[in-house]
Length: 101
Image (cartoon, rainbow, N blue to C red; front, top):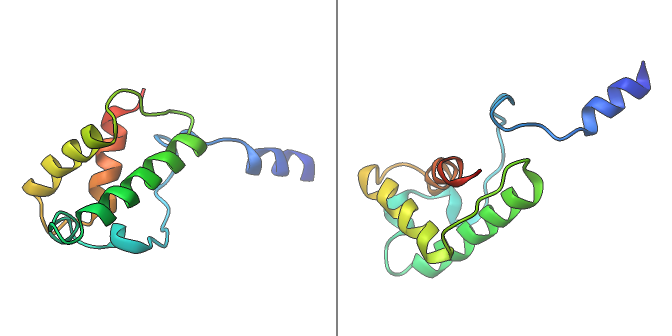
């Protein structure tokens, strides 16, 4: 029984079937879209998003293929312009789900 529980606990999880987890979000990802796309923070936001997408690609069953970093940021900026009070992490997750295969 313990072996089965350990195997289940270490198995990859399809993000569509997993319940949402509360995570600690660090850096500009926890800030609003409005702040993230302020010219003073754009480079920081770009670096944060690239790390977020890289981690998702590394640890997810589905990966993003297609646009480069600027293309990903362009997609996120569309979401952020529509909802400037949304957190950058929420916009990034929405775009990740849209772009993954």
